[in-house]
Length: 80
Image 1 (cartoon, helix red, strand yellow):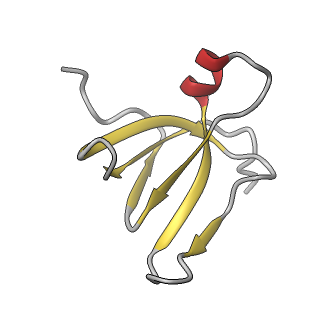
Image 2: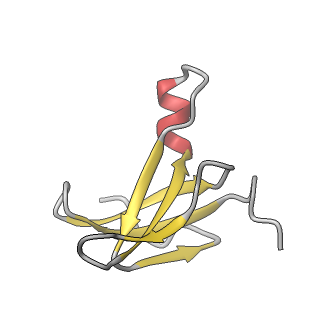
């Protein structure tokens, strides 16, 4: 299955925001999954579509989900 250019929603706990967030995302050649070298938890690097559109400088805006994340075809969090 080709995942590049596929749009999905990734949901995870963001330590920076201290809550669960959901981002509209895609993958490119710079995206990957790995394991943190020091602490051993998994992580996924992805392109944040909304941030890329807002920045509008021709460069993708990358984000990283770590420890545990969920990927969906549709948004699952409601805006409050």
